[in-house]
Length: 346
Image (cartoon, rainbow, N blue to C red; front, side):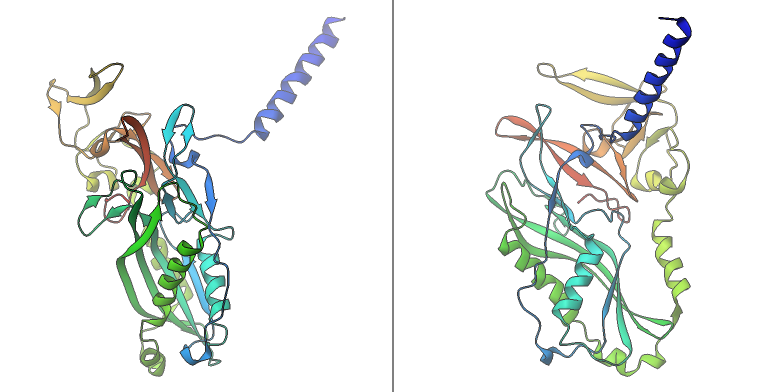
């Protein structure tokens, strides 16, 4: 075969390989919680709210302004990935969290709305399932018990809208206790759906909107542009907006959030414990061990020192990671996410 013809075939093969590579989906690292499979949650409509409820607005609009808009949280499902136990699934809605809740509200309350030109806008800052009790600052071992309480972190901001103007009303910032998940959970269980619906209904029916609508013209006003600008500021965090991470040791969450490590010169070492087990530790430039720190960036990976030096991964406007736990004499890894407002995990 002539050399020129061989070269053409070789170039053609390279181009085909290039297009194949572009078509392949990038798979997250095994240590990244984003590798977990999804479990779809459906808010199936079984009944419609009675008209006697009489909500003083004509519809409900939801905006998802959370740090991670891709899911509702993680639930404990035991599974094995590459011979390592990664525990959990990502709870998602097919339409997205905000749209699913918005559709549920507008269908469920269709007979309770008022045709008065007033609408309700809800901005979700937090809406997240977790096995961590924030009030007690205690992590729940979701693997030790057959049934374990979970907590729903909820921070919603309510606005009324009329015409082109928006009227800020109130903010609910709470952790709702009492959601029960089972080990090896099936998240589409009827019971779990109904619990979530009761919580959602309470977030609409408990607040007193009638008095606000009665005096709506006297309430402070904002334009849509002002509302959008205010919501965008929620993500205005240096570690999220800077183009690079600064290498160093972040002693506190505040340093991490502001991308300003207080210890610049350090080195990462390993010590052996047990059989084929190692633990990372840090030393400063003088060889002194650094014992208290929130996390560090070595120029390549971000690691969260407060929780075993596990790798941190960016997800939307926050970070998440697996943490190792001992369960039934075996190592398992449970997914967590960082609340970028408080620095706590959930």
